[in-house]
Image (tube, rainbow over all chains, first blue to last red):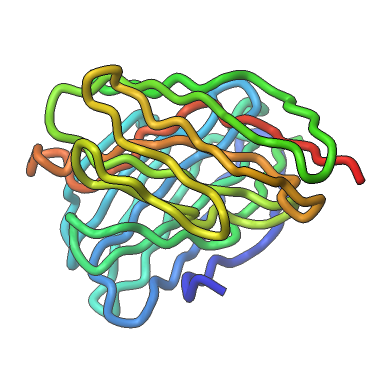
Length: 112
Length: 116
């Protein structure tokens, strides 16, 4: 158990809908990262938050957004969902931006 | 930009065989290098890491040496077990670039299947 908790584990929704994925980092970790794992794109970095502020941005679509709350948990919001958004979404956390990251078990999103 | 290339799988081996999974990288800064493992239905687990040239990371019988001259970080294990069957990801983190946070750039993953 990495200590990073992601909910829900599975999510099935229809095209055009909006979903929210939640991540609770390890106790004491200030950085939260979101990654997308899909069959065609592999594992891609989406976005990082550090102590409530956006720290780095990767290949995140404009339809996607994230935030980190004062209690350090994070949410990834995906809107206007398309079939191609079906993927495994991982959250990871680390103590700061220069230490190794620990991954949650992921949320499997299926868009039908 | 940064990139990681690793050998495509699947790699199928018999138990107790020697394992090598090749990984090469391109980076603009001074990366740290990692191997992560993903068991079926689970998240990514850090297997080993190396933070500077000539460092050797090791864990659970797996080893990888940071080779700056060949920009490589090949994963090896002397004797694989059925329980090692998983997907292995090579990754880098450009920790020398403070503007990049600690984002990981992953290779495409290599599936290892070990038969009894």
